[in-house]
Image (cartoon, rainbow, N blue to C red; front, side, top):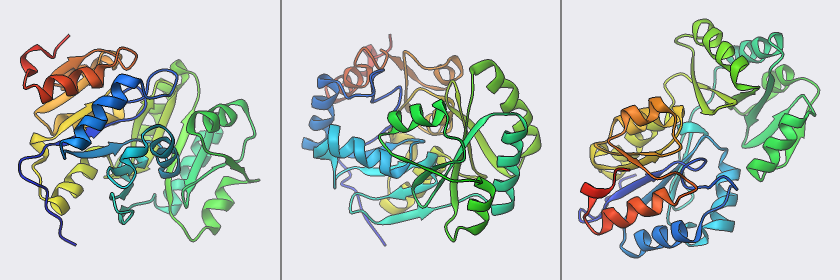
Length: 284
């Protein structure tokens, strides 16, 4: 499969939560118009999130309908890549034994855990965490008796495992997990209370490299926007990297530019500056 981008157009990559989406999990009118302008100018748009594909598709169809069939969608932090024609370009799941170890590890620490298999949200706990997460994701969840059995018996790969607990405890969980699963799982924060467990080698930055080979663009020239730990590696690879004003400190440190927050139309502000060739005045 060979695709070519028009050399006069730019490539824009947007994280969802904390970046394109405001705190109400909506797209502001100004951001809506800015993205519309990118499409009108023929620029390539890549939506890149830790969310599951079904959740990203819901947001596109309901909040950004003009991007359906136009934007490429990178879900599961790079584990599942679908192009604008709806073609699956890449899928990578966790090793079954490693996924089972991860579930047992989270059980021992009494951390809420759920998995994503065949683009379904699956939990063994019918708790407040899964109810809130389901609402935030715009996706219904499936309740099972035992996640280990579900992983063992599924013919589909486990695309991601998510642990949820309060921030201070999650710091400890992340530290233990990084030691236990070193070289086996990519572990990253997608939110202050969310810990993502991904196949080793899978990340948003790696997804951009995959897309750059297919579509023949230079990843160093891509305009990348993010706010969380799972955005760091894609912000690092581009010289046009934008951290939101609400971003964590370590994210701001790797980005070239820091722009207003997701509740202050930061993305729209930056797009307007880029299109008017005024990047000298983009930093807040």
